[in-house]
Structure formats: C-alpha cells, structure tokens
Image (cartoon, rainbow, N blue to C red; front, top):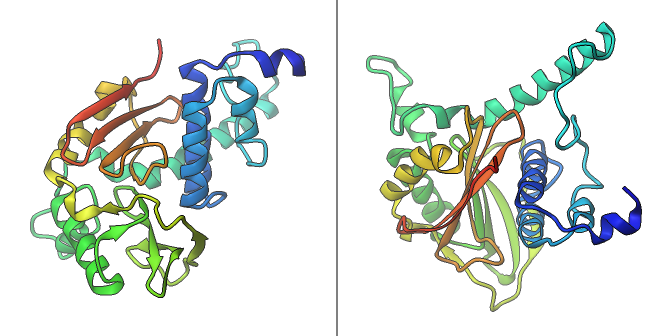
Length: 267
C-alpha cells in the first residue's frame, strides 16, 4: 500500500483493537509506562486512519507483525518455522505470566497450604487483594485518590500525585518491588482524578468474569483494568482482554459496574 493511500485509508475497529494489543504488550514488557500507554490507547481508540494507528507503534519492538496469517502447510523451511514457533511461545509465556491469575476464580485459595493468605492478598481481582492494595495506598501514599491505575491480576502500576506539588506525578508498583524504578510525569491541575475506594469491587469481579464472553475473546491470556483513561469520565473503567492470537476487546463500565460500551473482537 502506498504512503498516500495508507494515509487516506480508514481504520476499522479490528485495526484499532490490533494496535491496542501491541500497546498492551509494550506496557507489559516495559517499553511503555502507564502514562504513555494510556495516552496511546486513547489515540488508538479514536484514530480514523491506518496511518494514525501506525504512528503509535513505529518505535516499539514487536515479536510478530500485526494480523499475520498462519503459515501455509507448504510454507517456509524447517529453520524459519522453528524460529517462528519459538518467538510465538516466548510471547505467549510473557503474556500468560502477566494474566494467568485471571483464569482462576476470584478470592481463590488452596485450603491447608501455608501460602494461601498471601496468595489472596496478591490476587488484585479478588476482594482481599483489592482491599489490601487500597490499604497500602492509604498508609504509604496518603489516600486512594490517584491520577490513574493499570491493574492486572497480580500487580498494579498506579500513577499518584507528588505530595509537595499536585502538578507532578509518580508511577509506583503494587506490590512494591525493590527492582522497580518509579516513573515521573506531569499533569494539569484541573485534570480528572480517580478515587479507587469508590470502585464496587464485587461488581468489577462480575464484569471481569464475563468480559471474555462479552468481548468474544477465546482462551484469554491477559486481562486488566485501566482507570484514568484521558477521554473517559473519571468514574469509568476500561476492561481489556486479549489472547495469544492478538485478539483483543475492550469493555467500558462505570466504577459501579454499569456497562457503558462493549468493543468485541470482530468476526
């Protein structure tokens, strides 16, 4: 496709979803921080042309191209095929490790095991884990009002305001990690803020459990919640679900659990 025609070609919902999947992977492997990820996701969901979508991912490393069809039976030689399989397996492993907890019931513990309580505390999609995170925010950062948050089953990256200047922000990890470096940023003083304590976590668990079916994403490998989306009201949350086939969908709801919009996988 020529540069001129690509600039003029309108994007489909499937193109936007594919770009969001690339941005999700870039967040997971550390190429983007939560601020950049949120901004690019916002731009992807409102993009009208393929050129606009391409500009959001040109500086990112990708293991596999977007919308690559499966290799034919009489495809490339064994060496090329084995390299491709290895790449797919590596990508699948990274995404699965980030989203594996989403495949088990919320608040699940193994009776009689020594680590059952700790496991519940780090299941952020469960009641105990969610409340533990809110308690940590209150004790370590003075409250539950944040600029934004990306919450996976086993960890969250939360963008908080610096206590001495509300124009400056810092992105922190929960559970805290000694190896994780805080990322700093800036915000407008009149920018919306999110109070995570207002989230109906029971309603969120229901939405998380039903999201793969609603979004038509089979065998999901990654599920996360995004609070503080620039183009959404502060009391809205985006729930993203994707799988190893780079199929992804997004569900938007209020923090009370009322579904606002559903963008499923096409086809």
